[in-house]
Image (tube, rainbow, N blue to C red; front, top):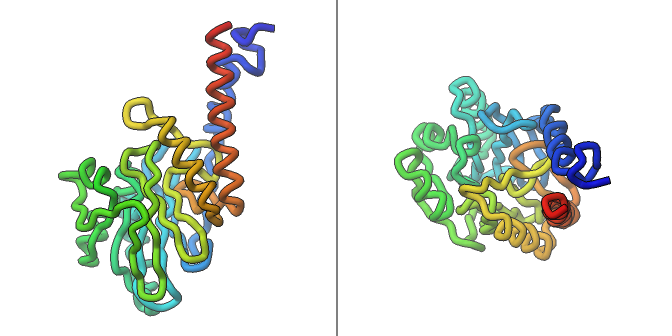
Length: 253
């Protein structure tokens, strides 16, 4: 059977049918609360792509002391109000926000950043490429380089430059080894690499780099945590290479 036959499991039509099926079911958002040592999550509704409907806003820090908010993502006032109230409760418990960090510039990750920064009077941290892409939309007060450390009292957070999905994409590694992964991976399904602003070869290199680093759990922006971080990263690489090979074979047939 030819791979160009739509009924063939290896056909381009079949591959796209699998993608459409995976997009039909909404990815579950994690419940608010702890997801790893030093990390808590508060999912917010965002204008993201299916199957996701929410973006995880992560808060990193010790049980008492300064906290880093990663991707306060929602542009919707009701969602911003909910996050504000939750962060106010955290501050009252001895965990005030010291800074905001952004994994990358996409609207479903930065939609509430300017609001929260102005409300709390805290700086926004991001990669230089992200800062350039956000010019006029959200001020970035500190540009983070690869392996730069954000000190939060007793907790040190390491910025990891992981481009490919976006030019300035960062992940953030906490002392336990868990990584706030942004859009490097998803809890359900795979990640879009847009032809205009993404780079598949660079993305694969970012996946391989984190797998070789021996990271712990991955905490994606969309969907639940991934306990076996290196395993998921390697599976992503294998999946992308397999899919490219199948499409190339179908086109060549």
